[in-house]
Image (cartoon, rainbow, N blue to C red):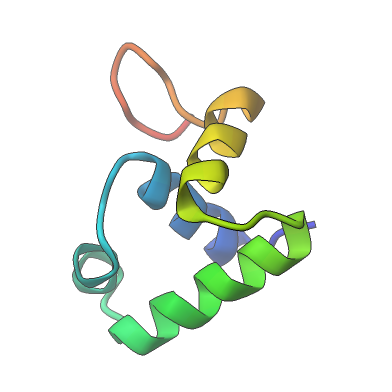
Length: 70
């Protein structure tokens, strides 16, 4: 459903990073991050980054003991 990049961004959102931090970490523009997040929310039929974070945690995409992607 999500592209590899979209999943990567979803995980970073769930880790609590802001758009600017995500952009810096991935060496992309903040506008590109916002576009990806908008696409992710649309694909998953979610309304907010808070809902996206819950989705990521529920799917087990993060290791709760380390906070890193699995």
